Length: 245
Figure: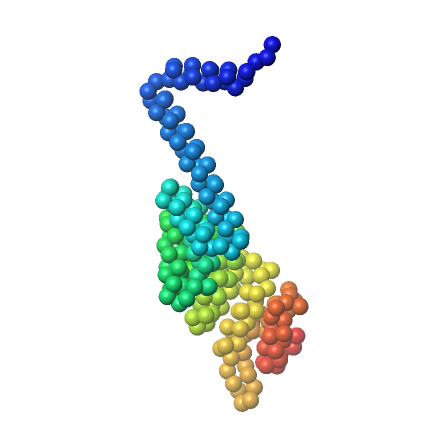
């Protein structure tokens, strides 16, 4: 005997629906609508990802903007939109660059408002820093480290970088110390700690005297990354203060 299973399933589903209460029917309809919406959003996420991979960031922004209009309650959509805007900004002219960073900040703020995560706050921090809002960027990185201590080394390193760029030497050293405490194998944190320390060096006669810990920071970098990106600058810094490698 040949059974038409699809037809049988449809008959059973119809029979079950007929036996539902009005409340149950309404819940079923809402679930079906939600499934359709989720499928549409997943398709848009996939299309935006493909566009971004192909370097078509404006297209990705358009697709993700449409997705946030379909459902503004999904944190991932806002996060992805923020990423696309932030990545597109460096290629824009100055006025448009400012706008894009501002819109990226707004998108990330939507994301953290729905679901605060370390990654969301980290990218918000970068967008704020690029937008020239360094104080707010510092707060975002600190939030990231508090929420996500597992990855705090990266967040504190980024915090130290912002402080280095804004000339907050003592605060930068403290941030790099926190990055090292969270991730002792993060070589770059030792190097940039050393850079900030050597910025506080003084002259005694014709000899440069660096604060305590400067040589140790550069040597630790060289221990971890003997052929690293900053290996030669680290050696030059050590030589300038008369320290051995």
